[in-house]
Each structure stands twice: as structure tokens, then as C-alpha cells.
Amino acid sequence: MTSGGVIDFNHLEKYVAGDDALRDEILEIFADQVALLLDQFDVFQTDEAWKNTAHTLKGASRGVGAWKLGEICEDAENLIGPAPGKQESRATLLVSLRVMASDAMDEARRFRLAAAI
Image 1: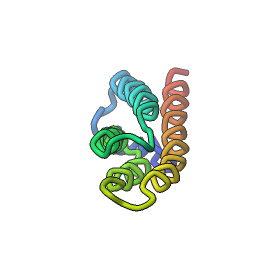
Image 2: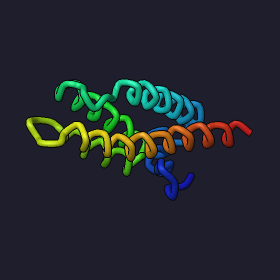
Image 3: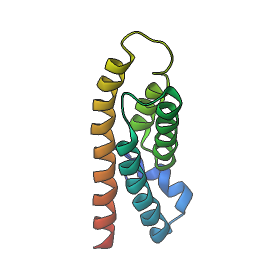
């Protein structure tokens, strides 16, 4: 288990207590949920929908130890209200969020494949 990548596998191990099947299931659910939530993000979402999407992804990320992704999601949660340039700020943040989320999904899949060997 390592904590040097996007996902802190040491954190995840605390919750699965050596149960490789559970860990793999959690990583699979995480990757699927991230993909689904990324499809939902839209800079023109209502504030409530934007905040809910960001909050859900934040929770999923922190649950597996994807701390940096969780931080970006927390920043996204705050991009609501009557702020000037809100859509532009969302678009900029969404680029970072998509890159980090893609890295997390890839790392989860690579880890599961390596563990299966």
C-alpha cells in the first residue's frame, strides 16, 4: 500500500482491514461514481446542482483518500451565488477537477489490475 499517488491507499486500507475484495469493490464504485459525477458537472448548472455534484464527489474522494481531489471539490462547492465571472471560474476549476479525477480513476483501475495479478 502506498500514499504517494493520487489515492492514499494506506487510508483506504484502514477501512478494508486487509479485505482485498472489499477494497477492489470500493475502488470500482469510486471510479464509476467519479465518471458519473464528471458527466453531471456543467458550468451553467444551478448553484444547488453544482454544489451537490461537488459535495458528492468530495465525499467519494475523501472516502478513498483522494485528498487533493477532495480539496478541489471543496473549492468547487464555494463557486455559487451572485459572483461576477462565476461561469469562467467554474470552467477554470473544472479543468483541474477533471484532470485530477481522471488521474484518480486511472490509479484506482491500475491498482485493482495490479492486485489481481
